[in-house]
Length: 375
Image (cartoon, rainbow, N blue to C red; front, top):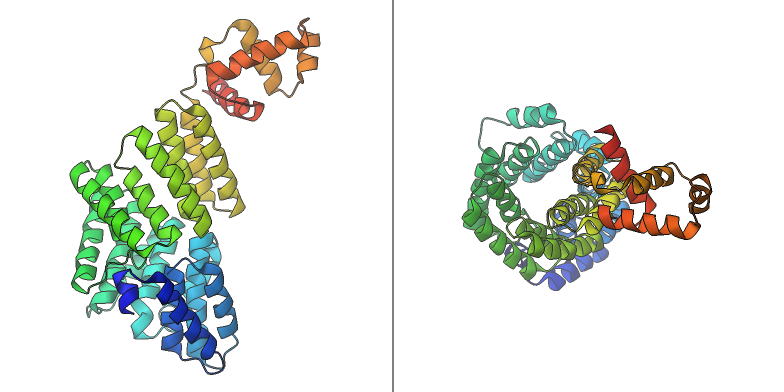
C-alpha cells in the first residue's frame, strides 16, 4: 500500500496484487481483493482487473461480489462504457458499499454522472452526504469529484478550489501518486482557463513529474495533456501527440478523445490544418465507437469551428465549381466530361483546391465545403 500511495514501484505493486488475487481465489477476502484490484486499476491494467473481477463475481461472499462490481464499473467509466458504469454505481451506492469504500464509490458515481452531463443527479448525491464529516481519504476523493463536476459545468474557479483542497489532504496523508487522484493535472487545466498561468505551469510540471515516477501510460498521458495546456502551440502539439499515443495504449477512451480534440484545436491555431483534421476525424470516430454523444458533440463542434476558418473565398470560380462537383460525389472523369476539360486539368485544379484549403482528400473537402455553404 505504501508503494501505491507514494507512486513508486509500480511493477512490484502489480506483482503483489496479482499474487494475492491468484492465491486467494478459492476464499477471497473483500478488503484484500479491493486493494489488489485497485492497484491494477491504478496501473492501467484494465483487462487484468476485469478478468479477476469476473472470477470474483462467482464468489460466495456478497461483499466480494460487490467489490468486483464496483471495480468493473470504474473500468467501464474509464474505457467508454459510461451508461453501464452509472447503472452499476447507482445500484451499489450507498447501501451495498461498506463505509470504508463509500467515499470512493460516491466520487466515482459523481464523476460518471458529470461525464454524462447529468449534473442535477450528481449534485443531489453530494447534497445527501451525512452531516458527519467523512474520513480524510474520502474527503479527498469527494472534493476531487466535485471539482470534476464543476469543471464539466464550466465553473473553473470552484473546480480549482476543490481540487487544491483535495491535493492538500492527499499531501498530508502522504499520497503523491496521481493515479489515485490526478488533482494536479486537472487543477492545472482549470488554472489555465481562469488565467493563472504561473500556477498552471507549476501544477502541470509537478503532475507530469509524479506521473512519470509512477509510469503507467494513462497517468503519464493525462499529465502530458495537462502540460500541453500550459505551452505554446508548437510544443503543445508535440506534447499532445505523445499523450495520445500513451492514452491509446492505456485504453482510456474519454481522455483519448479529449486529447485528440485538443490536438485538433492546437494544430489549427498553428496553421497545421491537415493534422487538425486527422485528429478531429479520429476523435469523432472514437466517440462514435463508444457511443458517447457528449464527446461526439465536442469533437464535431471543434471540427466545425476549425472548418469555419478555411478560406474558400480564395478559390477561383473554376476551382470552386470543380470542388462542388467533387463534393457531390462525381469522379474526376465525370467532372472532366461535364466541364469539357481533360482529367489531368481536373486533377490539377483539385490539387490547388486541396493546397489552398490545407486538406488532403475528398472526405476533408466535404467538411470544409458543407460548413462554409451553411454559414
